[in-house]
Image 1 (tube, one colour):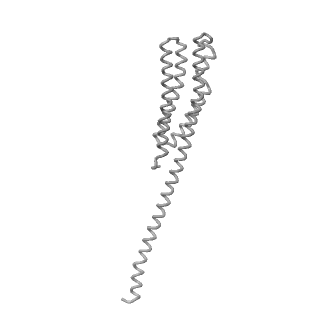
Image 2: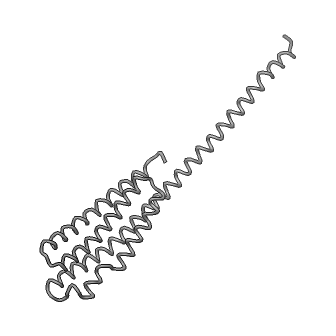
Image 3: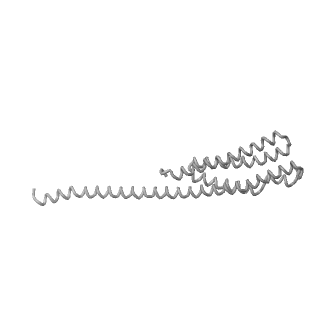
Length: 191
């Protein structure tokens, strides 16, 4: 075989090798870019979730702060009715049924919960829904106490205060499980 034929054979073998190498490099480059995009999106989503979860907990804190003030007002009104200082028909007593500041904070909590629903994942959304439900029941327990005082039946009043304590515990429990679910979602490396 002379040098000319060797050169032709080398070129014939080399050109497909170069082309194959180019195709493989191109595909590897595209995959690397795609993988980097997935990683960046995962980081972005994790940050969005963290911000949302923090906003939800802040809204819950403000809601509970206002509800604690309302609880104190309900306790004071209950004592005032027992002592005869106030009647259950008085404006002071009746205003406790729909305090605008509590309604505002519960609505704000619900608005942030909607954002939690959007950023997910489902497990965290379900826990946020449970928190909102517990807060709503806690607020309802306030009205139960007021209604029990209006009815005057001792058993109703005892049940109402027990319900208030139970719903307070439920809020704390659902808050804890929300935090656990949020922490799990934020530390999940699958994105």
